[in-house]
Amino acid sequence: MHIWAETVEGFSHELGMNFKQDGEGPMFDFLRAVSDIYWFRETNTPLPHNLIKMSAAIQHFLLVFDHAKDELIAAQEFGRDVERATEAYSEMEKAYANNNAIDIVLVGSDSLETVKITHANYFAGRARRLMHNALHLDQMPA
Image (cartoon, rainbow, N blue to C red; front, side, top):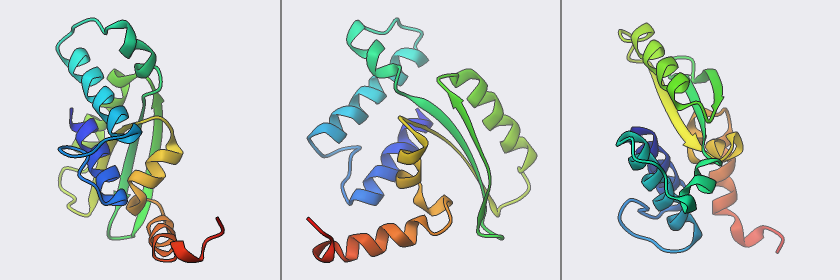
């Protein structure tokens, strides 16, 4: 569920809404479905048919960010293989256990492009471009 929480926090931060507690619409519905999928997986309960299709869209991405260098030093894609992604996450946590400058994040999302939005601070220049665009929405073409 940690992966889900980080994803929701990223969306909430970027979009200025609290998707953990408030919201409606397609993004809220998607995040609720993802939460349900993780719950079924963690409790070894078979997924209901309506969530099997949704589950197919969730991919796992491991990000390793070095704050001292202000750069992403690793980004790995694991597709739908949550076990392999979790193992890699644990290995990275052990490898960098004594380095407070390193953030290790395992994210569940539909694509790397979505991760670049929800976790923009890990991608060079991405957060700055998103903020610039948000501040200049009135100047963007319709």
